[in-house]
Structures are given as structure tokens and as C-alpha cells.
Amino acid sequence: MRSTRFHLLAGAILGMLLAGPGGAWGQAAPSGAPPFQARIEDLARALQNAPRLKDLSEQERIDRVEFVVGNTLFILLHELGHVHFSEMHLPVLGREEDEADTFAAITLLKVGTGFSQRVLADASQGWFLSERRDEQTRAKPLYYDEHDLSSQRAYQIVCLMVGSDPAKFKSLADQAKMPESRQRTCKRDYAKALRSWDSVLAPYRRAPGQTETKINVVYGDAEGSFAGFARAFRAIRMLETVSERSASTYAWEAPFTMEMQSCDGPNAGWDDEKRVLKICYQLAFDFAELYRAYVAPPPPPTVANQKRKRKV
Ligand SMILES: [Zn+2]
Image (tube, rainbow, N blue to C red; front, side):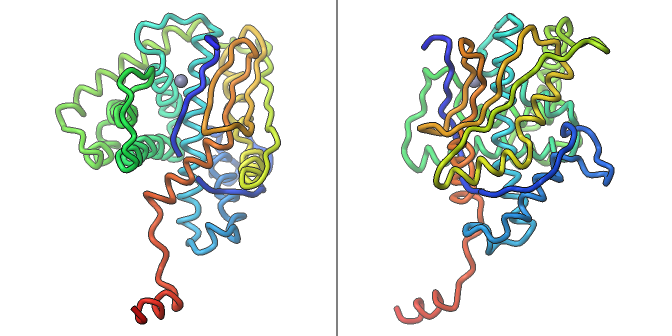
């Protein structure tokens, strides 16, 4: 369907509940911890007996849950970028897919918390790992695709980060092997991108006292290994966190829906006929698989394994 954009994406784990009500991720909680981050950490603690996570330390569990939630959040914001283009009839002067990534990155940089910065670092790492997986599975790069190649998407995030604050993100850019000369020009890229998005969105900012447009939130049911993901995202109020912030910031002309659902693959998309932004649980599962395959430390040798080794 012409109006439907579904995106094949990267990413594997999770499964549980917990957390309470709270504001958007940028607001400080009474405890001083951002509520969204606190809910993710609560989720990671609640997962201490999950089969794939029980042998990890608490910090390793938090890192893994943050990677999955962070990459999924980045895609949710990317899709929200498409909703802005569609609903606000914004000019598209380049590749819309690139601009949707830029929207997601700028939104998170504006939040400006340690957590939002880790989400961006996780998202760039997610794209680098996708590239590595593609190389290992000998998946050919699709030069004709509407999206940039995975490593280009990763570097675009790093570029906007180091462009926004060269001192803070230099080590991240160095780690990604981005040359210093490119790090310097990213400053200009970031300034232009920020100015452009601020300028096109300015007429749509909600005035103080203006009624908020409802953004509906739906968590579809899921079965089998995906049911845990459904409970987890509901528990951390993933969709509410983004929808409440967006409804409060922008004067949307008409209501629309953000939905997490079970699909036949790791997809996400905005359907401008049904007016539904869709994120599939399978996408989060894929991120968990990606992390488990390429980041997670190998399991420590068990007594049984050691005995087996000695026999051979
Ligand atoms: Zn897209």
C-alpha cells in the first residue's frame, strides 16, 4: 500500500511487569531519578529470574534491558518523525527516512538526560551490530533501499551527538572511529538540523492553555515469547511516555493512535489511512537477539562444562 510504511529492522529478550505511574522521561521524579529510567531499572530487577537473564549481574540486566528499550524507543521516535511529516505536511527536501532518524536524535538530545544520551548511544550501537550481523549472514546491502545502510544510520546518530556537544561525545565518536575532521563538521550538521526542525515545527507548537489533542495508546495482546514483551512495555508505559510528551508539545490537528502489537516480523510503521503508528513486539525481540548474539558476555564455564572439557 502506497501510504503504509513498514520497515524491516534490527534487534532480542525480556518478559515481565512492574512500575507505577509517572510523567514523561524528561521530568525529574521526587527521588531525583527520571521516572522512565527508574521504571526500566525496576523492570530489569523484576526480570532477575527470567531464564535468559538470571545469570547476569543487576547492572548487566539493566544494560541489556536499556539496550532493547532504547533501540525500540529510537524507532518509535523515528516513526513519530514520519507522523510529523504526514500530519503537518512538512516539506521533504531530502530523504525522509534520514530526516525521521534526525528527528528522533534531536528529540532525544533535547531531553538532555544521561538516560536519553544512552538511548542514542544504544541506537547507534544497534545499527553497527546490525551491519555486523548482515556481514556474517552475507546479507547484501540494498543500495536502492529508501533507508541508508545500517552503518550510515549509526554514524548519523554519532554525528548529531558529537555535533551537539563535541567535548561530551568525543570519546563516543572516537570509539566509533569517526575521524576528527568529520567530528568538527558534524557541529555544522547538527546546528542546521536543529534549526531546520525547530523552524518547521514552530507553527505547530501548542500554545499555553491550548487543549491537547488525544493520542490514543494501545498495547495489543501477544502470545508465547512475545507476551513478556507486551507486559514489559505496558509496565514501563513506553507509549504513554512518548504520546504524553508529544501531545503536550504540539497542537496536532486530529487524534491518532500509537500501538504496539504482535506482527509477522520485526517491523514498525505509520499508516496514514488508519492513522496508526505501529511498533511490533517482534522488533524488540530482534533487538534482544542482536544484543545476546553480539554484546552479551559468554556464559562462565560451569562445573559441568569444565568436566566435559576435561574429557575431550
Ligand atoms: Zn521510516
